[in-house]
Amino acid sequence: MGIDGWQACTIADIAAQTKNALVGGPFGSNLISADYVSEGVPVIRGQNMGFGRWVEGEFAFVSHQKAQSLSANLARPGDLVFTQRGTLGQIAIVPSGRFDHYLISQSQMKLTVDETKADTLFLYYVFSSPAQQDCIFRNAIQTGVPHTNLGILKSTPFLLPPLNEQRVIAGILGVLDDKIELNRRMNETQEAMARAIFKSWFVDFDPVRAKAEGRRPHGMDAETAALFPNSFEDSPLGKIPRGWQTGTLADVCTTQYGFTASASDEPVGPKFLRVTDINKRNWIEWDSVPYCVIGHEGRAKYVLSLGDIVVARMADPGKSAIIEDQVDAVFASYLVRLRNESLAHSYYVHGFLKSQAYTEYSEGAKGGSVQANMNAKVIVGAQLVIPPVLILEAFLGCVLPLRQKLVLNIRQSSSLAAVRDALLPRLISGELRVKDAEKIVGAKV
Image (cartoon, rainbow, N blue to C red):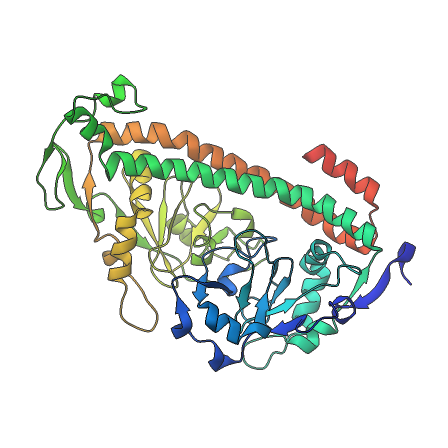
């Protein structure tokens, strides 16, 4: 018996007493990439973990028939998913709403919780805690690629308070994560608005079309509208606004390959931006970026500045991000830095790199080797329309306030996450009582 009714238990003790409550993914050959289809039942893979509480991201799918043949490996809303191999320590909850069931991949394990004994969200926080993360790594099988298995998961010990107290603790931590989640959704809205402006001005040429038809461009003041021509002309890229130019990214950007080093979780030097830090969100969450050791000359050569753009050349070629916060950071060798003559050019290039046109270009430009890649020359080989500088500056005036709000949200989420991470181990160990934690959270949210 533990503190005030807290009990020592294992995962096996709180698993639901139903068939397939605790299972791993399908046997290797039972699920292969050839089984993936454009829609159907989503598959939870490694790239769908690591977003916080919920399984999310871009899913691969299998047919309903294929999923039914692997029914023992299905997960449903409220289930917990653990990483078995890959990035060990990841845990997420299957969300409700979008899909009523999912298939777990060979690299995941699924737990259906006995809700009369344990709260799923509380368990999520337990297994996100430093103590449980350390337990996962200490007990991992080190043969070959480090991994764990169902037997290890079943026997994993932890402290379990009474159910009502579990829910209160989960609620306290959940309030912080709810605000972080709200900030994320707000950022997605800000990002979508900036993309919509880019598409309207530089893909659909809406202001030019409106003026050509004798209409005032929608949602645009007269001064900005006056910058756009009222007709089109032929170009290598088709009809473009009269007076605009065409070229390639190489005409507006310089390129530089990144620094080769090992990443460290310890603050041994500047932040070390990698492909994995830019390929899940359309912004950079610096808190999760590791560090690296680098000398004075290297730091001067690879230090990132506001307006710099980095593009992945390997691992996830074509993915990109723009530096929007003043952070002491350098960039890794799988990234290529693009530098532009002004911040207005940077945000225009950033918009282009996020466009459908560049996505299609990068898909076609990736090498045919086992590991897709794009070198610096290929990255900046894409053709694009080059508007006049005054229009680029007007575009910056529209999108920069949106992106600045995004940066402020990231900073606030970072502060909230720090509070959550400080409270979590103390709450789930019983060191900090609920009433004291509620006061701390109330002052922050």
